[in-house]
Length: 286
Ligand SMILES: Cc1cc2nc3c(=O)[nH]c(=O)nc-3n(C[C@H](O)[C@H](O)[C@H](O)COP(=O)(O)OP(=O)(O)OC[C@H]3O[C@@H](n4cnc5c(N)ncnc54)[C@H](O)[C@@H]3O)c2cc1C
Image (tube, rainbow, N blue to C red):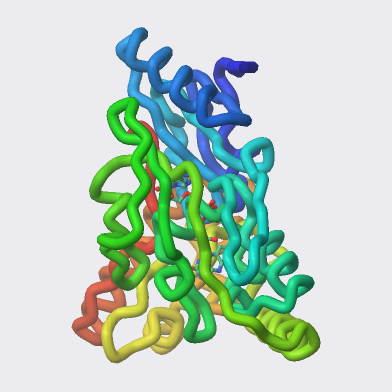
């Protein structure tokens, strides 16, 4: 295992923001994950598990302790009938493509979400009417050194799961899809891709939608109606293309993003009486 000291987290987040992690390691097996957690515990250090870093804002002071990155080195998967059994570091886009090739429908919604399977289950990621909750059959996770597999009780809700509350490491999952027509599946994925490219600032660093959808509203519309489209604090800017996104317009710090988030929350609350809650996870030392 290669443990890197003082690793800049901006190199591992889609926001391209974040101070250094004391220690950082990309793992390639369950054994390595267990070993790394024991290593952190032995040194009395906290640890933080991440996937592709597409839904986190890491503080400018960085992360104390060990960051365990579960991504491409832990990403094997197998398809058997309508089931996919995969390690948690595989990208959703990879699984969605594989499902399409195998004439399996149900993952089209996930093809453009830039996260890992583990991050997507943790967040119950979703788009275009689909959600991880509709395809997850079982999850294998690590808690207190023990590996457990569960087939229900995932606690899925809007952008949440039981795994966040349990504080566990998601290791593997089984997804159940349905037989479908590969051409129709492909067409659906293409359609979602076009819609994303048209509506989202995919050419700029971001963490996707910053806020959860408040009941009865759309965060982006509220922010736009509050006159905040294009509003900027330092290098953090409300996207001109999609007001629900904050983009790193160049050299943004985590503090810039946090100040902008607070400004948006206060303004939207004042104008419309709606509380905006962050979807992006804010992590690290403040
Ligand atoms: C351009 C863009 C578009 C996006 N569009 C969407 C969208 O349409 N729908 C949507 O839901 N999201 C979207 N997102 C947000 C993001 O891609 C999803 O939330 C994704 O599921 C996060 O996965 P990740 O691997 O990047 O997780 P990370 O950002 O690395 O981590 C997110 C959380 O999951 C935890 N975590 C990650 N892996 C594990 C694991 N193996 N075990 C335990 N905990 C873990 C982390 O501790 C953290 O709390 C978008 C982001 C971007 C940048």
